[in-house]
Each structure stands twice: as C-alpha cells, then as structure tokens.
Length: 432
Image 1: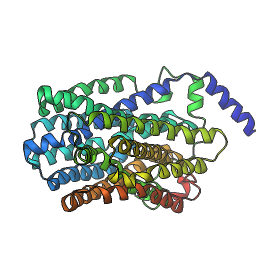
Image 2: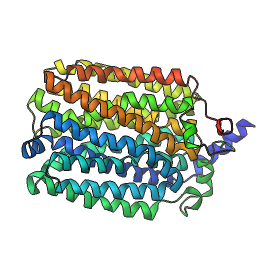
Image 3: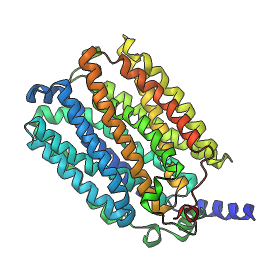
C-alpha cells in the first residue's frame, strides 16, 4: 500500500507545475530586502560613526536595541501570523519595517537611531515566521529544506547587494537619502506579494496535481495547540536552543564584518565591497546546498532525523576553521575561511529553520518560529554587548571568532539531546 502511495506522489510530482517556486521566489526577494535594510548600518558604520560621533559601546547599544525589538517582536509576531495568515501577516510586517527603514534618514542622535532600529527590529521579526509558514503551506516535507534554503539565500543576496549598492548611493546622495531611496524602492515587492500570494487551495495557478503533491504529507487530525503549551514541549526547545547559540554568530558577521576587514586589512567604504561579495556568495552556495543535501537524503530513503542532523554536523565542521582567522595575514585567505564559515552557518540554518514544519502542525509553525527567533535575538543582544566589550578592551577579534567557530557543534549536541529522533509532536497528546 505504501508503495502505491509513493507511486501516486511520484506521478503527481512529475505532472505538477512549479507555481510553488514562484512563491519561493517572492520569499527569496523579501528576505534579500530584509537583509539590505538591516545590514546597511554595518556597511555605513565608518560613515555614521564619523558623522554622528559614535563610540564602539554606542554602536553596540544600537545593535542591542535592534536585537531586543527582534526578540520581543518574534514572540508576538509569530502568533499574529498564525492567526491572520501568511499573506496579510507578511504584508503588514513588511510595510512596518519599510517605514522604520526610511525613518533612519531622519535620525540625528544615538537615541533617535536606537529608536528607529527598535522599530525596524519589530517589523523585521515577521520575515521568517511568515516565510516559514508560507513554505509549510506550499511545500511537502521532502522539499521544505530545499525551499527554505533558497529563500534563506536571499539573506546572502541582500548582504551581497548592500556593499555594492549602498556605498554608491551614499557617495552620490548621502547616507540619509540612501535609507529613503532603498526603502521606497522595496515597496514594489509589497504590491507583487498581495497580487500573487494565495493559499494553494485557492490559487488559480495551482493544478490538481501540484496541490496533491503539496498536500502529500499526512496531516494530524488535531492541529491547534495553545501558545503557552508550546513552552512545555521539548521539541520547541530543540529548535529554540540551537537558535540561541547560532543566530548571534550570523548577527556578528552581519554587523561587524566590515569593521573587522577595516581593522585587520585596512579596507574602507570604497574597498571592502569585493571581499564582502565573495563571502556572501559562498554563503548563498551554502544555504542552497545545505537545504538540497538533506532534502536529497530524504528522497534517497534517509529519515528526516538522520538527514537533517548529518547535514548539520558537516556544517558545524565547516565553521570551525574560522577560529584562527584573526591570525591570517592574507586578505583573500581570510575571506575564504570566513566565507566557508558563513556558508556553513547558512546550510546549518536552512535545516534548523525546517524543523518547526517537520515537528509541529501547520497552525503552530509561526508560533514556534517566533519562540525560536526570540531565543536567537536574545543571543544576538548578548553578542552585541560581548563584541562591544571585547573590542573596547582588546581591539582584537580573536576571542570573538573562537566563540563563532565552536557554537554550531554545541548547538547540534543540544538539538540531539532535546530531540533524539525529531519525532513529530502529537497535538492531541499535548493538549491540556
């Protein structure tokens, strides 16, 4: 019987049109915009520090308040998106963070900058809960890690575009105009999202064959779980603890990598573009390859537990050499080591981000993603203070990279201890 079922699914897959990949493309574009908006402060740090007179501690405080808002926003936004749905939930979050992004151009003091970064963090916290909920709605389990890897690769594209586009805009029009121009231009995405996104069942572009493929996974009879109950489920923490340990490393790269390249290799706003592009191109490869690898293993007969964890183990090994990058004198060798590390992070993240849809019913995915996102943002708050303190005290990134290189193996161990089999949560058993 199972063989017949697999045959039906395979036949559906061969006939299915790929409209779900159009949705994935929209998620990719939104994530790219999301990362352009958040990374601009890192690229413009030398200019902003000179213009506004920031110290290292004040810059760390601004990053801290973004992370604090991200942490607070994730908790509420995840549940909000579960209730309102991905289409309008994503649109509201996108519009709010775009307004906050444009408002950066009107900030003059550290306090004002912290306020608009806080607003940006609240809005941007909706990106991944909405995106992952959309992936859960549009993709079967066998394709989710790959789809997540593709849309998560938008983060790297945003990180590539930022050091190429923003210095040119800043030198031509000033940094204030750069914030406003990029914010207004990104509103094109909002129009496209509202025009193109519907649930698969209601979308005229989805064929019966593609819908059968999308809904080929068995769905639990009971889907709803009380939000407070999620905190008592081990699988929630199997997602949240690794997020707490690994998200801060990505934030560190995003907000301090231009500063590291400037301190260690003498690069500036005009010259650190190519190294950053190379690093984030490698990250893109890692994001897609990491999602593809576990999805390919599942299609080959591996259990999701084995496929996800084996891929994440290899990713953890790839990150480790970054521990010694502070002592590398050659710029491009350092770029290679950092690029492999960021690729490892993105591949690890593509699989970690898939876990809520593997483990929880669709109605709870946004909430679980929100809880994990909050944990990651709290870690980001801590890393901001840590990096600011270490740089202020030593001026060296050595200890910072030592933390970055070892965090992923600890995260994988925590994941395995909390969920040895990655067994799906049964909502009926977890209901009060």
